[in-house]
Amino acid sequence: MITQVTEHPAALETCRVLERLHGVRVTVPPVDRDGLVDPAALAAALTDDTVLVSVMAADNETGALQSITELAVPAHEFGALFHCDAAQAVGKVPLDVSVLGVDLPTLVGHKMYAPKGAAALYVRDGVNLEPVVYGGGQERGLRAGTENVALGAAAQLAAAELADGASARIAGLRDDLHQRLATALPARLHLNGPEKECLPNTLNVSVDGVLGNELLSAIPEIAASTGSACHSGTHIPSPVLTAMGLDSKQALGTLRFSLGRWTATADIETAADALTRAAAAH
Image (cartoon, rainbow, N blue to C red; front, side, top):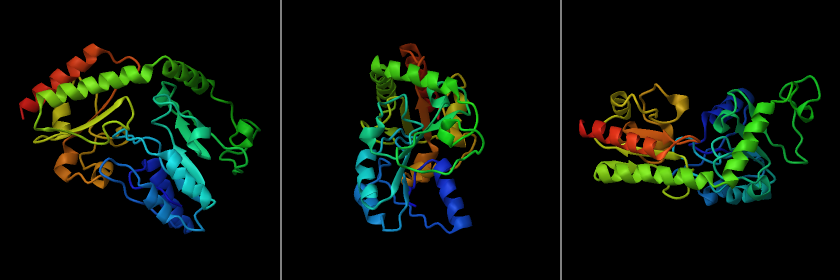
């Protein structure tokens, strides 16, 4: 199996368990400064006994968009299946499985405002899987249990918003927040991740001279995180940012802002002003 160093723990930890319990050989290529996998590095890691490649569509901390279509080509040339964790990307950027060229993309409901705990797996025709839950014939026999209609409804709403230009609106607000912070903290603010090839709703920045958790404590009116929400409450350097080459001071000075359906210009102004004041006090 091949994954990559900044992959979500949902995939990384599964790979490690398969390695520990079943002797699966796992190869983990590095990423560059923007958190992106080099297609050449992935191609070099492939061997005749590679059965699965798993690379996420968008990073959950920086929003970096991987070149999934380009990465899937060499995997298929070696006869491997390609899984893509698309949880962060679905509903925020257009995704077409036929264009991506992936065999097994996964998504989760709460990223599209559906109830937590609902998720979906797309299975390309011709791919045979063992059921994850045995029982009735729901979900093409792969998972017994009544279908989650709330997830389907949320996906329909997300698709309609994308068609109506939601991505461009949110990207404009994110860029406005970044520009306000860069102007107010010109020598201290650093963008983590690519400037263009990233999700429209995610802004990950580091502020020199202060810890991210200290900034958040000083601005309780702002809902943000010091990295992935999956690791909130921990004050250790993000493995994702460390893999991208940031030193511990930069990684610990990180804040991640996530914009959404109801984010407005007034919210951007409030967040920028509050963070600027808090950073100036340190």
